[in-house]
Image (cartoon, rainbow, N blue to C red; front, side, top):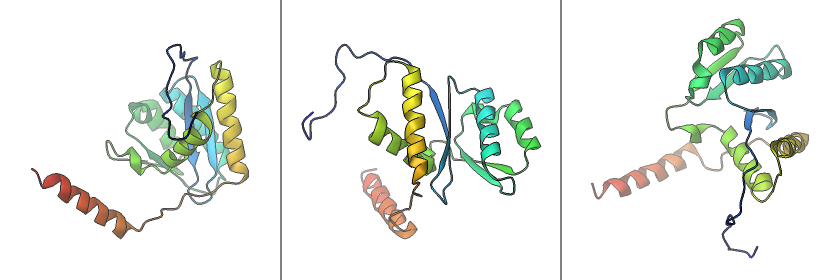
Length: 167
């Protein structure tokens, strides 16, 4: 593919299946706990939380930033949360997933590993993802904001002024 040429799917492109990737990012160290599941049910989410519970030292509290997916709010998840008092859920505002720092890690996974790769089946895809995550955790890097809150708010204010000028 030539530089600046957009990627395209051919007429014979075929999807070979999908999987659900759960990821927990330690914002201080940049390490990631991952789990791949066939679906994204509350039972799958609880299995992932159990994995996080096993891998995070018992003396630490765990703060989980979540989107508003119903899977995260079922009675089963609520009961699990009542039994695991060190876990604290924080839900992002609706349509606010950009606030999730782990989204930046998903973006790196997509652009650096998955974008140009081909997998014949879900098993190959899952193995590739887990291999990439393991490599990432060998030399993890925390994500650092490159702009101050003031710079971001100034940019947002000028954007809002521009889009509201015609209103």
